[in-house]
Length: 360
Image 1 (cartoon, rainbow, N blue to C red):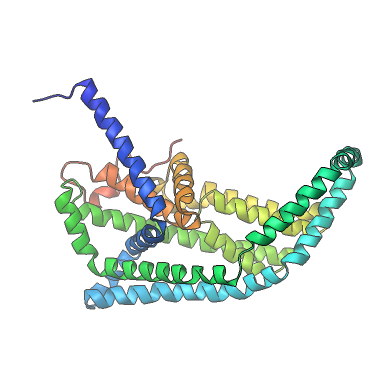
Image 2: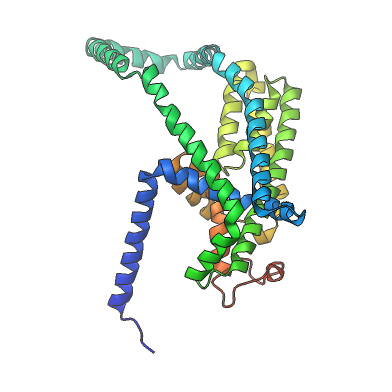
């Protein structure tokens, strides 16, 4: 039995690190293609049980995949129809909201008059140079302002990305059993049963989190209605969608609630909507999600944060959508499928050391 020398082991580790760097460099450079393809595969894994359900109803595999695709697109279109009027109104009222926020900030600044006087003295000393620099900057902004032609140039790219996503989603759902078979042939440790169990794990996790987020969004909607916040349904829908992006999503909602509360209300009550959301989010994160998802499928917060940072750095919001499902799939596959003989669904119920358990 041969053993590797330290030099060989070090060389192997260096080559593995270089391979990982090259892979992520390629993913970033080919975002236009790889992002919709990976999104299609991830959502195909999530929707896999829907295809299995349709097949149990005696539908052909291609028809079952088409039915799951149409259901997914129907939900996406419904979300768009719900969001579009509210987002349009928010964009139209953005200047008014900005003026109100500026007025509020100026009121706070007036309480720090001493600091403001120092700032004015510095501005007067630098006014001559600043005037010329501002004029040049204004001209530069005018030159760099994208026109209608540049804006329309993004249309074909967006349409192409959507078509790639839809095509990948459909064909993956229609042929995912064959895909799992090919992967199992090339990687003996990744058996078909283990890949299928990983699919069930990701789908179960996503479905459970969706139900939790829906309840969270409903509670936020009721609370914002009671406080008299504008468009409370929008806050509930934003909570439902952004809560899929762990940590970062709730921070965005809380910040938006804080800004809107300062604009809408006076005094201490202006921060009550944001504090209420933070309180509900703490209950959801500390009690509701752990009790529903369970210790078996809990994720290490460090892994979640690093996964979000990595994929959002690569692909922005699209990376944030696929980060958590990918993390669940990778952790399950690397911990369970590496065992001799693979794993089975019955073996996943009560493991002695849950692979996805969060660190205390």
